[in-house]
Amino acid sequence: MRSFAIHVLLSVAWALFLGSVDLPNLAVGFVLGFAALVVFRRVLPTDTYIPRVLSVLGFLGYFVKELVVANVQVASFALKPEIALTPVIVAVPLRVESDAAIATLAATITLLPGTVAMGVSDDRRTLYAHAIGLPTLDAARASISAVEDRLLKFMR
Image 1 (cartoon, rainbow, N blue to C red):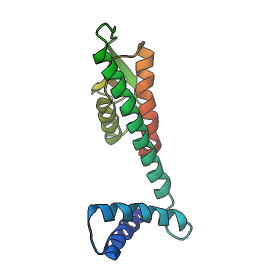
Image 2 (cartoon, rainbow, N blue to C red; image 1 turned 180 degrees about the vertical axis):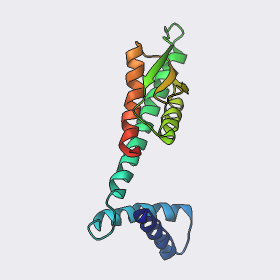
Image 3 (cartoon, helix red, strand yellow; image 1 turned 90 degrees about the vertical axis):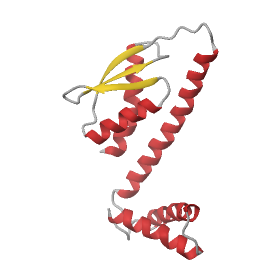
């Protein structure tokens, strides 16, 4: 938490240095502050902060890529009048354990076109989801598990 506080202070200091505390200056300050934390990581207490931020950024990049691919796929379904959609409801065993991680996974797959989280089992070990455009149940399960893999990298 100290690393995050230092990061925020660096970004605010940058904005104050420029004379205007507004969103663009804070954003640039946040990027420059992160760069400073990376450069001075041996001096500052950033033991897990930098890898965690990098894993969050990696997940966001992965999510944006998957979002674009899924949107193109669903748009192609809409434009092809005779496409055979294969809607499935799949039970996916969960490896994430916390309520926050389960909610994040459910929200993430729901935001991706073609998949909707339907619910979680009472023991919180299985996620039920609806998917279209995937050839088999295993492909649907693998698609959701791939998102969970990325999520596990920064939520642990």
